Length: 85
Image (cartoon, rainbow, N blue to C red; front, top):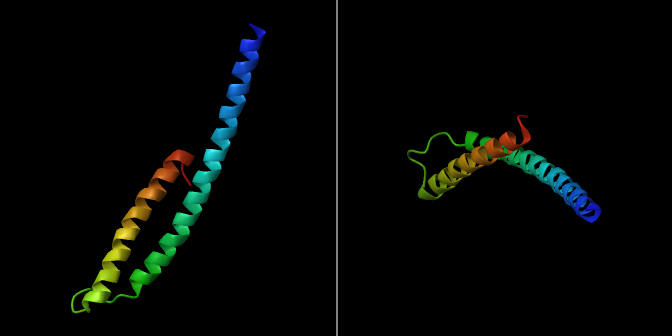
């Protein structure tokens, strides 16, 4: 019986360690995504308007818009896991 309790305690300690590693990873993800979001927004601000732009610039603009949407999803998920921020 004592071996079972000891094993359970060890597993709980392992889970606590994994939980703290997960939170640390989410914090890093959030920090990186927020920094990239600032860069993407700054790049988007450089575009005056999509109409009349060459196709290559329109493709870059649309790529940045898609990336911003993905970053919003990542940031929202990380914040929900971390409980705010």
